[in-house]
Length: 98
Image 1 (cartoon, rainbow, N blue to C red):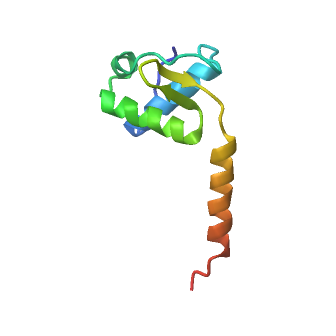
Image 2 (cartoon, rainbow, N blue to C red):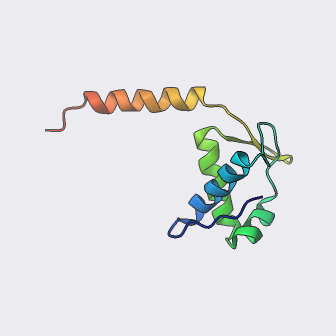
């Protein structure tokens, strides 16, 4: 896995960047199991809570899926997330801010 070096990132952003860099580097692909939270935490020098928060952000974005007892996996499930994001954007643009 690649090293995360961005200064000033929040802890969860370091986790997101770490996973992103691992995908770009070819170490992770769709269907790949993420390393255990403990390993990511040790490699990045973060708490496991920070790692969980980063993985949770990736779940929300549709790039990680968790399977109870089996771990976290790289996915590309963007349909629902894009639809929801666009829906909220359209609603906000129709609002009168005055």
